[in-house]
Length: 376
Image (cartoon, rainbow, N blue to C red; front, side, top):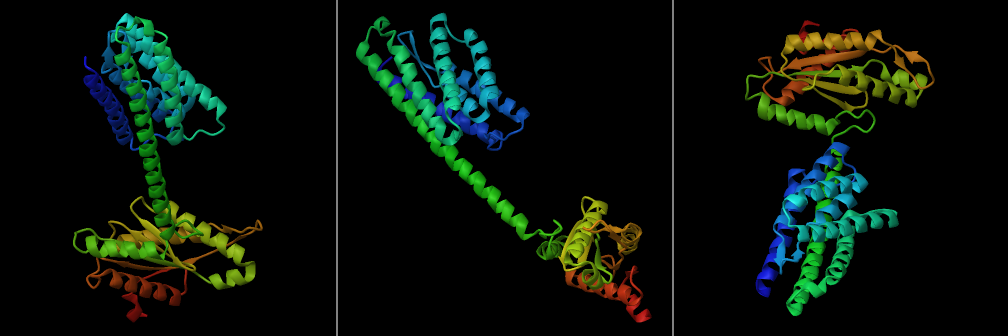
């Protein structure tokens, strides 16, 4: 084999490594992290072992005694990301398969290469207080390349063409180090992307979440109303809206203090969310006003669910921070897209708000709907 072909094959072997790691990371949804569940760590470790075996199968043979390939790099990654369990699985799985795919001479060489890489990663982990895999991959890879090169040179007398062998060995080290450097850059970039995505998701959730109760806030409610306009009014599905307001909440704050008022709001939010179905949306619209958007629900069904809320709230006292409790009631306004005069989300909100006013004026602790305003 000419020196040019050797270089081309080494580059192909390194490319196989990079492509394989990229595919594994995508299949596992960028899952290389030290905080994965143990079952997922085991799965990825086995995948890394399979990649190591595949790379070894496509190693670059020279003079039937030198096997230049980068199958040891997945072992390093398993060690740095998943610790001792990861390196055990990847190393043992690879070693058990190697006798079936390599000749006796190459098996010994490859076994020593893998052992040096795995041992180097383990020692490195013990010396470091905190492992940063995206950076340490490059470092441990470089250390492993040096040890493997030294081991290979100990057998130098068995090679006929010393110049070609040394050039091949130098190319092996340079290309291997370059592959480790690329991994450092790629995985570092991927982790930064993950962190950015998590931060964006966190900020989005915060923007749509009420800080006190953990329910949706007014912005979430408005977004749901936009969805109602876009989807509900153009489909046979109906929704019902409950607007809830705590009765005499100001007097509760004045009597028991604002800490007690906050505790009541939190407890009420918990009860509303606990009773809601999976497709319902519970929000704190502001102050002591809450809303429940009932999916696939007409007006009469909304009244049934509203009465259930009234009972659950009024029949069980609300605990206060000082250990005492207080009885509480709410008034609820009900409206639904099943009503003929409700054709926009704005009308839905307005009708429910009028229903809430009717419930308040009719004595509180009850449900009201907008059509009852004229009757009263």
